[in-house]
Amino acid sequence: MPYCRECGAKLVYDRNAKLYVCPSCGLTYTAQELLVESQRAFEERLKSGEKKRKYSEYLEWWLSKK
Ligand SMILES: [Zn+2]
Image 1 (cartoon, rainbow, N blue to C red):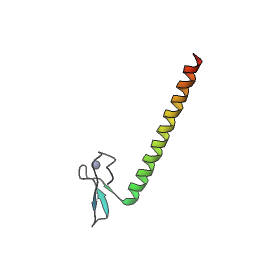
Image 2 (spheres, protein in one colour):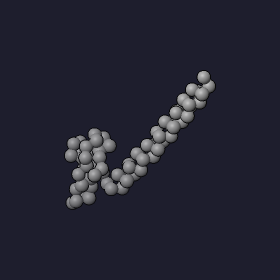
Image 3 (cartoon, rainbow, N blue to C red):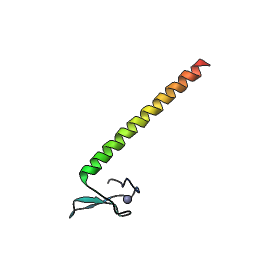
Image 4 (cartoon, rainbow, N blue to C red):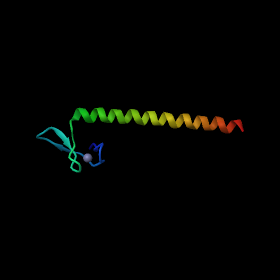
């Protein structure tokens, strides 16, 4: 099950409205919105992973200079 991007609560699927509803803050999401959201989160994870790798490369370079 997907999670609410605002408060992190587990979303509940409303079959009648065909929407995902957050029981905690009341936000609603369409399946399409959730798809876009999860893709964006995935890309951000990739980006932050890249940043970390670059930083450790820099650290190795800096340590090897000593
Ligand atoms: Zn929420």
